[in-house]
Image (tube, rainbow, N blue to C red; front, side):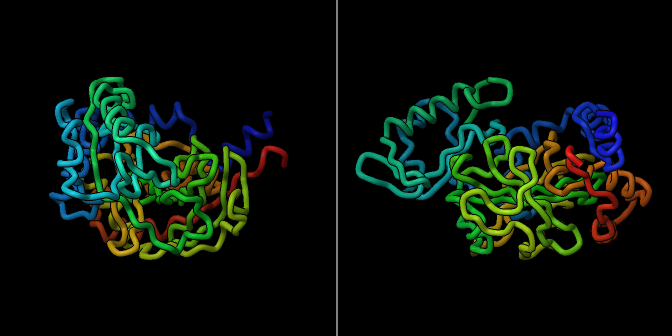
Length: 321
């Protein structure tokens, strides 16, 4: 155990207590948390700043609106329903098409109008919200994801998570849906995390349930060596999100749409730490290098140049090494 602890320390692995005490609590103003905890506020904030986000079709904030749901959609048949204050992908419903007295979900199964209305009522009741408080349901554009990741995706929409530290993109990964995750890219539900080289935007390894893997569990295709298109633009969007919120420690989730390019999916003031396993290195290493470069008074372009200089200095060894 002592040897494992030393290897983890040498790799700069950041634990949850250190994350909370040394980064999240110190760098993120609690008064600004509603900007990222409420996805409606996040979306409107991003739109005002001219950042690309999935179009918001409607917000269901009261029970009387549930009965008028179809009218609120204005004839749209493909959309995503999300709890405005949800987390970890809970409560998200992806609809592919309208059927007679019902809807077809992205996985091909059917739900009735009553089922969908009941789901909306559950969201309003706070079933999926962070603190169990009454919530709102967002209805937004369903992303038509870029085909570049077709061979390593099972049904759902893959996304990208970028950790931004003091305005500098510090680490990134690709998150891929699997059969076990029910087509969602969330890692805790069984999605795959794939590390990304910050300089090139090339994938460099994968993980599933905190264990390293080389192939997607459902498609069998190689996870390493995939080029993320528009990578520099993704880093730029991520850094701008940090400027927008004022957070010094931020997770930025981006999705690649086939026609619209990179879209900001959501922001997270408490991003998880599994990204370190996907990248085979800890967050403390790039954080220390960013601190040494002192980005406080730097421009956006200067901070992006710093990100390009962040190469992992030590890979995490497996526990069995």
